[in-house]
Image (tube, helix red, strand yellow):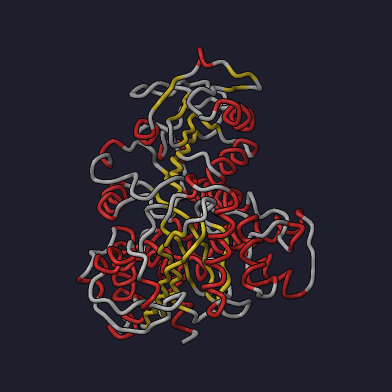
Length: 477
């Protein structure tokens, strides 16, 4: 494993010294230094990284892989840490810690997003890079996995400051990215405009970044791709269950007279919104949605769903949220918003509703030891990265809850990123209809492969996904 960062004995000491202005006198602009260190003893791994590595170890042992191969699958190829020096609007300079971790490129160029958040950490970025390797392999893409991030709260900075930060980061990673090396994309708090800034600053070819604005080489269909891909997976799953279970309704909570399955979606950002919107259009009954400030539901917490129930109007709720600033005051059904008929609920209460399908599409570890006994949904679609803790996952799986893992459920985004990259490399521009058709084919094929392994091995969908991915990765070694 290659680690590219300042050679300091302790991470905490490094961070303390970053607060002093003289640090840049000792280290060059982007701190390109090599060293090897048992960093696991410095900071304990976060839950997501521990869970990802444990799953790889368990899967690898089940496949009869040697410890050497398993270790190679766990450790990233390289860890790059940077200190960005960025000028603020007031003329002062600020130092920001940043990362780019490249996990594995057996299947092709590294691929992974860049996130801006105050809680970004190296372990988190490493976990997400690891999951990107698995996700790309699950989706059948010719990519490996990587991830990047900067530790800061973008909401506290002006647009001009965000532009300078984005460009400085792009210049820092420019030597280690490229269309056939590492292909970044948007992630938490980053978007097409930020990709455009980075593309300009890096002076790399257009295909180096995906998730760009359409007029700058982006692709149609990318914005809703993750949510759309999740709905494709859900529909594929329901078709399998209906064909293989004689009394399908007895396996879920549904009491609906119309036959529509009930869905609760936690998270109303890009992923949650488009999942809910497209699922509603496809005939599912969306009974509850929430954002970071809370949510609204067709039924109050602790109560059963009525036999007859209409879906929330997701498009109308988004219009209302843009006006009011939150979902909690936007109870909209059939094109009409009337809060007197709805129920405000917390994010915790949404997770515990007696729905058929629960879709955590916000944060990691929202389902954990503290609430796993209260989960009533019989199907969970992991649209967020790592929304279920390892302990909760094991408990719910043993209880008979069918969980579609994040590496499959939310892979629609990277699938369409691949289509954008492909168009850039070939000098082509596709219609949205063609992009969506290709996405449907890719997601359906990925699901079918995982389902075959799931049925054959009599294991969980998550284990089946990891086994499929690892099999593809080691085959290319």
